[in-house]
Length: 373
Image (tube, rainbow, N blue to C red; front, top):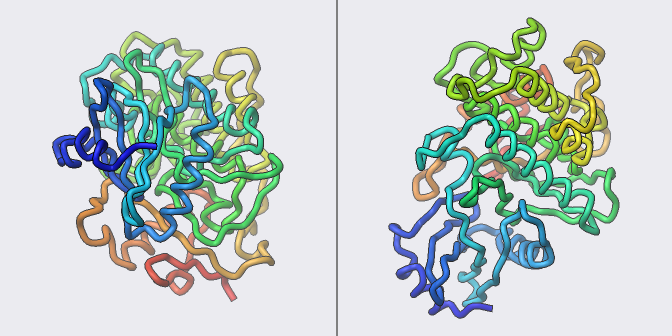
């Protein structure tokens, strides 16, 4: 347990110059305490579910020991508005900053990227299959992957993690929290939560690492705006190598790039049961297991596959969606009209259908998707 005044001093009174990043649940600061560097995560007081997330994170993370997970060193309970986690400091920023922004001018050749892919997969395997009860992260994305001094991947931010008594089962959750571009279809449409939503998110991240671009990027045109749409089109045209980041130059091996892309496509299958478990993903990425034939799911799904029409249990789902580029100190990043457009894009690349405008309404700061009547 840390004293608030010690963390205040370590971070120079939480000065902006010490801030490492800002997320939906709070800010992370660099600090120096007793001669050692630390990362201090301060949860936002106005986040209603913050206390629950804070308690979950302490219980979960303190019991974990894995080289691909960020280590929790301790916590601080100052008062109701001072809920702080203290982590080990990880030297080389997060994967989003390195891959997308070139921060740190680090060498990100193919062997290093492949090692990062295997590291993230190994960390998720540990969470899903080596911890009892299993843990679902719920927000796997490059910004939550930190890189240490040797550019090894470490999964961070377990504030959204959930415990489940039995792997392979799913529950319905009314508040969906995640990041646009990484949400699994069954999660965004039905609120169904299982370890396979992490597998889906990992598949998106895998494709981002290979391509060097974000999953949703409006700098591109047509189906290239959405990385998954583009990847599936290239797969159908037998041009998957076109997905590769040109910065890889001569460091890549054709067969390994193709192999990795196909693993990513397996992970983003629409039906959760068709996605591989993380132990199989690790084995495939290491070359210890072959890959089944990758088929775009719409080729064997019926055209009337509608997640709303097939769901008889719930009539609506509430979403709290994080925009990667939003600033927590500014006003909400988009209006309802823009959100309707965004959600239509999300559902389009996830399921092949779109939500009607009448199905989307603003409810208490959330976005409500109502089942068609």
